Amino acid sequence: MKDVAKTRKTQLAEHLKVSILTLRLQPGTDLDEVHLSDAFGLSRTPLREVFRQLAGEGYLDLRTNRSARVSEMSYTTLRDFFLAAPMIYGAILRLAAANAKPVQIEALKTAQQAFKAALRDGAAEERALANNRFHEVTGEMSGNVYLLPSFNRLLIDHARIGMTFYRPQSGRMVENLSEASQQHDAIIDAIETRDETAAAQLAEDHWNLSRDQIELFVMPDALDVPMGLPPLSKPA
Image 1 (cartoon, rainbow, N blue to C red):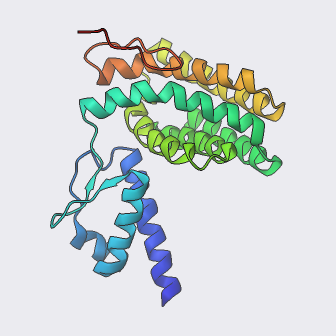
Image 2 (cartoon, rainbow, N blue to C red; image 1 turned 90 degrees about the vertical axis):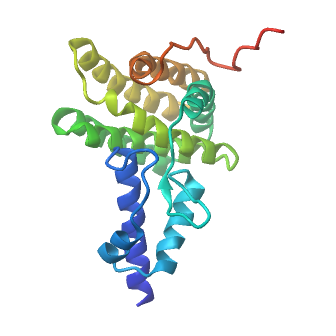
Image 3 (cartoon, helix red, strand yellow; image 1 turned 60 degrees about the vertical axis):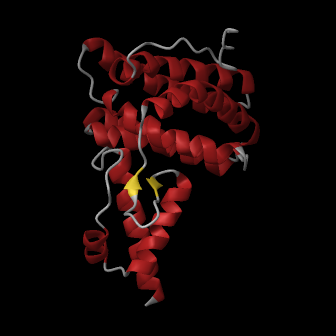
């Protein structure tokens, strides 16, 4: 029975992760605990254990005496995302080039093949999930216990706001998807050859490729945030 409950908890966690990453569950949505309990055959205690796990990873917000809800995406969190993303991506890929193990490089190549297949034949959701998995592997390669939780939290919102990137509405956006795939190949090469400098530069190039399009959908004013520390505020 314990194994069955564990399997159901794993299935629920995966269901919620995919639903959140692909916006089937919108930011700020309250979860229907009764429905989820019935659908996955879980009592309140294991259900809450899954919620706590996902809250720790950044997928959910837990509130006292209220239902769990999907983590929100406010103007503040989006601004923080745009400030933090280039710094964290650069650090992750630099560390990945330094620390990647052969089995992880093979996993990254497998993830890239899945991404290419999703670009050919998949819908926006499949493309976003395949891209997310590619970057998850680079995070695993980094081997940094302090940086990895922040990176994984970043990937949640990148997948959510990046759904626009995987629904190309112009020829230029289609070209950008092709370029993103080419950059993935270059990232693999940089990691495989232990070229930390090239990996960090590719992080910047990869971020810049999708940034402008994402800003059109989620930011009222374009931000000009370079790689590295955010700009200092002007004195009063």
